[in-house]
Image (cartoon, rainbow, N blue to C red; front, side):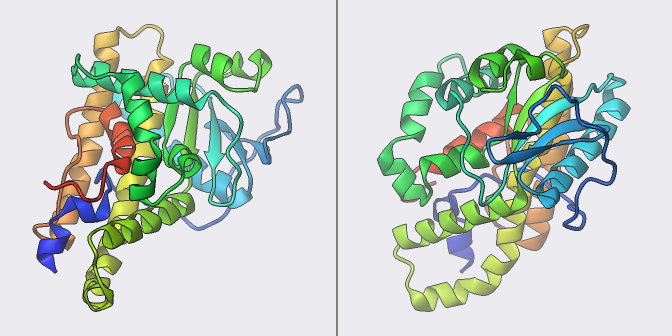
Amino acid sequence: MRALLRKPSIFCTPLAGILFLGPGCGPSTILKNPESWPQQWCHRRLSTTPHAYLYASSDSAAGEIDRTCARVTREFVHDTEGRAGRGLIIVNDRADPIFQADWRAIYIASKRRAVELSGRADADAEKAWDEAMSEEKLADAGISRDLLLQMTPFALSSAEAREHLQLGPLVIDQVSWVAILPTRALLREAMRKTIDAGLKQEKVGLVRRMALAPMLAIFEPLMIDALSTMREVVIFEALASSEADWSEAHRDSVVRKFAKKKFGDVEKRINHAVPGAPSQPPTSRASEGRNEINRTTSSPASKE
């Protein structure tokens, strides 16, 4: 059993961080929405809180993401003394339809930022899109193209949001930053599909599945927590991007430091819960946390 758990090919998942979620209720503080904004957009309702404007399909989805945003905002102000302006968050929940956007451009821009932070000059963002969205790799990962995009957290610059999202300048020009974030329920659905696809790819039969079940019951929540932490890094990255007075070097430095702290925490937690389990968080690169989701589509049959 331990040998199977040591094979990341079985799970096809990044391991990234720790997330605490409060009860499934709405935001604790609701402010008046901007009257000039669409009150509903792509099956999502607008909610305004002290930390963000949120388009979410339910109060519980808005509340979950708002609590995450509030926690990261406090850390951002404490760690950097930044201003932490209010941003816009589009929330993807389990039953939500994917909204219309230039997803290819959003993905490529995100990949390029990850490349810049990691220093991998040879990486090709456009090629990465083609590979990640190939039908073969999506089938191996057990998820659809839409689900992969919806489970991936993205930070967008104002220019990118204006160009790639169908919200218009009336909304985008009034916010300090923009992010697209999944709920934990959506990540859980994606994770279970990915684990099931990995087990099938490894030809794990019923008896071995039953033997693995107790360990998977421990490991699955940790993997979902790890994916959830990528949302925190994306929010932190978006907050940092809105600090116009910061140099690029300083911005990259504070985001890397935050990511290293978060991804380091999950290593400790996973190693404590499952000694010898795979641990591959990108502890020195911020956007690599988000980029790891893109690698979810790597073939489950690949070997370490």
